Length: 212
Image 1 (spheres, helix red, strand yellow):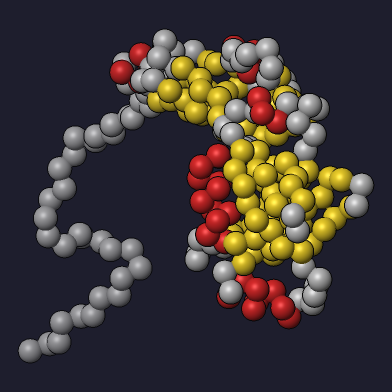
Image 2 (cartoon, helix red, strand yellow):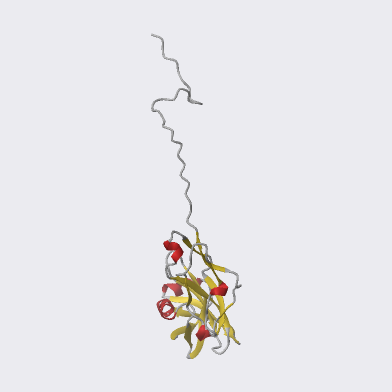
């Protein structure tokens, strides 16, 4: 899936201009990957976030820069964790016929039998690196954990993908496992504590009663 995103080339690269650019609703960005090296650009903040929601993290974007259209992927971006807005983005120009590497999220699906028996599902790996052509890169890889019992483990080698996508991680890398329920030891002395003041309290000073 591909969406059109308009971009403007930035000619004034002074750091002092970045604040004004962001306040106007634009995001400073870089597009790279062709013979011309890196090109400083800006894109509309709202339009970029809208595009990301529509096509996903690994989707193909048709970037319109000064009337020339480039097929790009969002290779990286920086987001303010407090204000929740993107303040910089990097776009990679891609060859649609060539394979490339990308990070893909792993989603665990289903409710595993081991959890129903009291076990705890632990996901050890949340992303994998894949190699595929740009249009074949999935937004995520679903891993069904329904049949996992307590003590079972899913490895990278257990994940099934189509022939267009190759997972590059080591086959023995653990994706998820079901741990046995934690045994909580209950300790009870069975002793009852009498009320009142202890006979001797270490470290506490006592004063003699005044003589009458």
